[in-house]
Length: 171
Image 1 (cartoon, one colour):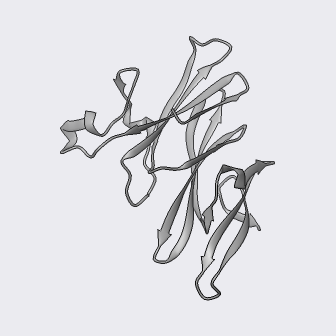
Image 2 (cartoon, rainbow, N blue to C red):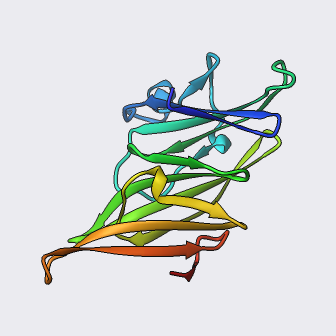
């Protein structure tokens, strides 16, 4: 269990699942997660372009007004990450590096009425401190990152405003 958020009548549960690489396609139980004892469908797993990952975040939707009604179940393969959930999105953040450049990878899943889908991904310079360093306002993601400036020997803080496609529109 990682966290849970209630949006309207829907409860979104976020759990973690470690899977090691299988030795071949026939070894699916070693690398495909199970939910309620059944292997997830390949179409329900989002595989972002990250350096290495052996860890899934599984997202399950349940109608809180009628717990017998289950919504979507999706998985995103990411190494350890921070999660931020707004009324319409679940964002996953993780540190990424390009040479000596510190970056924050952002992966967005849409959520609405029990439906879950992959939406967009981006990178911004600097590292996100924690989930209190961001919010969503009027469909835009606002976040603050920090990076080390090797030339000046100090930290630099950056403010970014990203649209729903995670394109930078301000900062």
